Image (cartoon, rainbow, N blue to C red; front, side):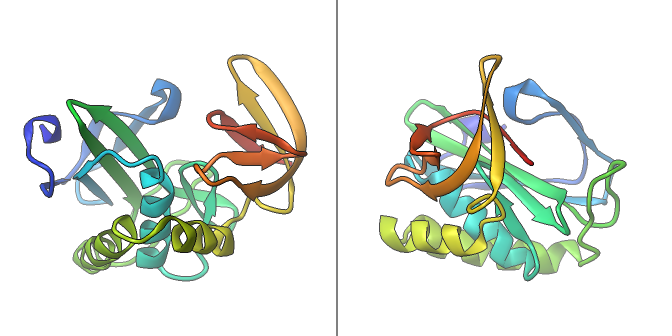
Length: 186
C-alpha cells in the first residue's frame, strides 16, 4: 500500500500476517501487539541508519542497535527496520514488539500511540539530519561496534571485530567494509 503513496505518507497496520524481514525472512505480529509502521521518504543511502537511531530513541534506553537494522533490548531482538526502494521513493518499514514477542525476542511494554508519536518525531529529525551526526549517534547506540561478529554474505562468513561504520553506513570488520549481510554477535 505504501508503495503507491507520495513522499511524506505514513501507514500504520494493526497486525502483520505475511511480513518479511531481511533476506525474505517471515515475520508476523498478532493484532494490537506491535507498532507496525511504514514511512515514505525520498531515497537516501543512510536512511536505514537514521531510521535505526530514530527507532532506538523512540523506544528509549536501554534499546541499542545491531547493524544494519535490528533493535535490541537486553541482547534480544525487539524490532527491526526494512528499507525498500522503488520509483524514486524509499519505503521505511519499522516493526517494534510492544505487548507480545516471539520466543527468544524482547517486547517493550509501552503504549503503541506513545511509541509511534516519539518515532514520528524522531524520524522527522534524524532523516533530515546531516550525515555526520547520524553516524555519530548510530555509533553511540551501537551494540555491534567493538565486539566480535560474524558477517554472512551470500553463504560466505567472515569473523572479526566490528570496528566502525563507514561514511555510507557500511560496517567495518577488521578493516573490511560490508555494505550488506547478516550479522551475528559472537
